[in-house]
Image (cartoon, rainbow, N blue to C red):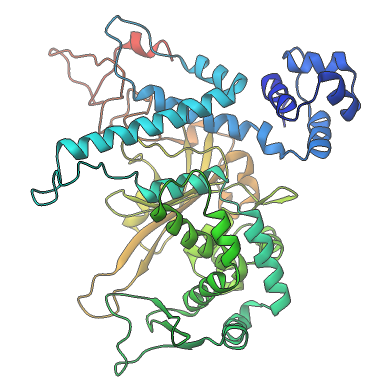
Length: 488
């Protein structure tokens, strides 16, 4: 960790705990003058001091990490890019000013991002009122639709860095207590459901058409029967049984975690419960310590880990993005799942990577290239506009419809990490990690991307003046005035 000046964050933490400088200095074994210099950004917050703070106050070091600062910078960039141009000719906020705000006043930055989110929700509600869905449903009570519940749940997991420590620990304890092993996971899950909860697992046949409309799992509480579709593979069956065990055995924990203040509606809390139950299921099938050890041994080889734990490609990718236990962290991965149209159906980040809410994702990202070579793993070094470079791995995953003519599902799953962690990842073999030119320049999405000369751009950058010249045609479809870019 580099030396970092974070005096404002330290002063805020001290005030939250009701401590004077003298009291905190005594607790940390420092002189009051030295602590004062740290708070005034005259001295950096070094690793030894940070460890003392963590031990004495029980603070997660992630609070002072570069990753958190990068998240705030990306979020503020979205907020400010979404603002209309100033008629008085005021210059846009520079990237240097955004970085200073994120580094010196993170609470203010988080507040601005939160206010902007509520502002966006208000605009969506106004749009819904101005253009009702149809004549029958319009104007009946004048009520605006609530915020999108699934977006709230995504933000909930994103705020936790996709790591739910309590559920992870509980799943690991259960796996050890029940004797869970990859080769006998199904028998252990079946036994636990029947002996502890009196639940039978049934796979309906043609003479018992219980599961209709593509249903994969259905729990009948009245008869204590868990129906599982015959379309499920072994690892998928185990996952659904583990999910049902989460609802049966972790109900108080799921309910408490889903009462988070960030979830404003009953629908959002219900979706969060499902997401938390799925999290427990993945952690039960791939217990933290055993899975992390295997990941390190295999160089985080996704297919090898799938073979060792009896699960699919997507399940391994999802689990790898969760390994953020403070005392035993894995590589901090970013996980994403998209369809051919670019719709993001899953996205989780254990690191600083930010998913833009404005516009789509970048078409130069190899997650879309995966559709051109189904079933094969595609790798890519990609550089973001802020200079950070990532190693990305992408592959398609497919689920059939179960019958001729029935529509199935085809997605591309991508897993990425910062280039500083790439040497630990088996997919970096043969890549020139030291050559900046080897990385493909990509962005968060066209509307917030700063790459003015990108020929693949689909939309002009929000808040930037275009260079409109009828005498000249350029490869880049939306050339930007250079004076607008000079303030970045």
